[in-house]
Image (cartoon, rainbow, N blue to C red; front, top):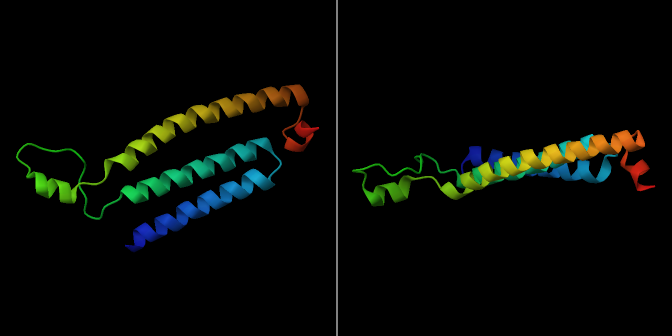
Length: 118
């Protein structure tokens, strides 16, 4: 494993860990949403790192390119497709979560999750 991939794996693990800690131990709902975003970004970084291939080419087959050479040198397209899908779903989910938090703030006058539990 090359050092760039190793650093990316550690960064992804750190983002996921920070996000999990934030979700469980922070009281503010906005900060919990940010922590969930950290988890999503960590998973996306992990998937991109899995799809990385040193010296890889874009997964588009050109005419006249030998199939065996292309199969050996192309990057893996599935992780990148999953990340793009995850970004779109994450953005819409984030918007819905923030809209719900705004409604809760107007009803209860607080962003504390402990007040909402009572």
